[in-house]
Image (cartoon, rainbow, N blue to C red):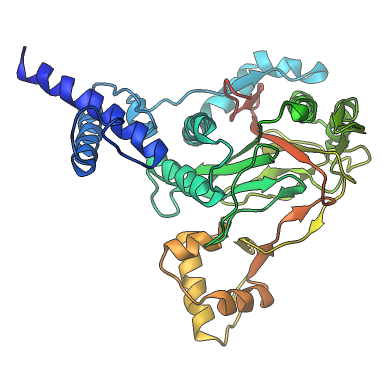
Length: 425
């Protein structure tokens, strides 16, 4: 046996032991057949990761680890990232697919689209792994930290150039959106919870905004199926020259065709009428156009070259959300000019926000991570001055259940591309 073979025979079971132990947050003799200490195992894992990176940089394509740890860039050494799902436009816009002029316009946008495809691939890899570890009993604070650390690693976070686009939403049950645990939160996921996982990635400010719903009790299957079907209907309906109100009408028709039986009572699944999809701009999660999920919206049309987040929310409640609970999400006002601030602490906090987030959303956990403390008064001052906007959790009636699915798509000159599509949803 060669020295390399012998090293592999020791290393592979050791790494497997560490993966198992990390999942259980425990290393015992039974889970560590290699007999190595926890410190030795971690050193071996770090060496294995470094070896994979060196392998990639030498021209060889590394294999992704489990959990994912190799930056996506190294998995695609030719620099070309996977395309999303292509869908043709309908009716009067079918001609675009064969137009030489439109194809040339599409070619000119390749570099920009390749960046956002990189962000989409990170999103797919992260959520694929997280779906294997999200189980009843997991602490949501730990879950979010694990998910976000994985994003930072796979996307090779670099200031405002690439990284996390907004905080990980993990809203439970009647809370529809904008909830993430603040520091010290002890919330634990339960078997009967319906959790919306909504997280974003970006490269060069080009944002992937995609969400899915996690549930364990099969009684919620019809609710989740309704929302997934409604979101896919919205994606299918969207396109160049399509009126926003037509997307909303199509979504509502599908969503409200579903019923769900919960504890002896039948509910028609309702759209949450005051939540919408939206256009997306560079470093701007909501770029001005709203995509309704009920009929009667604006007749404004979608246009070539626009990014849209098509998201739908279905509920067993009233179908209307309001702000409630402790705020965790914040975002600098995209249009805020210079605002004089009197508090030195507020000025210092704004400098931190500008440097680390710009106009991307952030949460209190992110400020904690940067070493900020005793910042709540300064943050309130920035909100009162209109420099930063708070985004409290959005809640339907207590006791109700809300589900969500969301995809980011791009309206090419020829066809539309569902950038965030994966094998999962």
